[in-house]
Image (cartoon, rainbow, N blue to C red; front, side):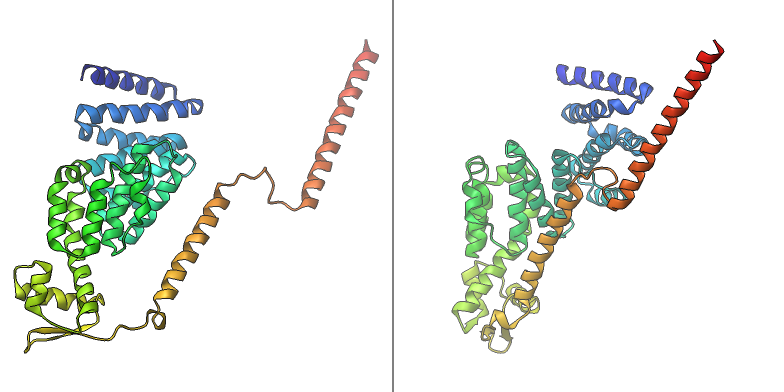
Length: 357
């Protein structure tokens, strides 16, 4: 605590010094100071006290075109909002600001915070895209960041109804930290509420430490949907009471509403016979006769186009590269002619001065 307090005081003194000088050559140094200033206050346990100052420093950085400072302060402000679960304000901040893509490390952090905010706000497809991009941008040496991002990405994929690849859980630097999420994924894939509840109880402390408890509670509906999908594949006709027993659910009335919702959402193709109190499955449609393959193909094309556009934006071109070749040659010839004329005038003036002497 003593060292942290000392670091806070040093950071504040240096920020005041940089503010007085206000030179663009000090932008990189000031960006590092912004980062340590936020980290010191965060470890002191009072990040809310500096929120207004962070916002004012961000406004100043935008006005002075301090790009490195903008990137660091954006992430500090988003981290502050996420720390206090102020996801509405964080989303508003993202909507009115422009991400800085020059620094890969800061941009990866920005994508992580954006992905987490989108996940909480139920924008799962956007969250998956942000988190996948953050993992591609971050360096391999950033093991802690990769662990945190991969955990959130696994939960988002499960909420979308997808199952993460098995190889993700057995990477060298991630296997230990991702073990609770591997067990959770197995429970969701099996579609058993009993196994799902056991997995949550066994690793509850790890989920709370990672701040994933609120998102994991949403997975209960996905477990039920997976179980219903398996039951519909196995049985052409089954009573609602038997579905309750297989899913370890308490109420038959509740399961009827859940089944009706699953039919409405297109999770299962079936009909409820209320008189007989049973569920009758329909024949499974050929997926290639639907528009599902076209949607997946379109998603892949959009990803490739976006990757290509990002690569083009990241490229650096020489000045005047957009001008045609003839225009460049004409400009170069004109500059050479002007320089010759200036040289002739200087020689003439020197000759006149010598003559007067």
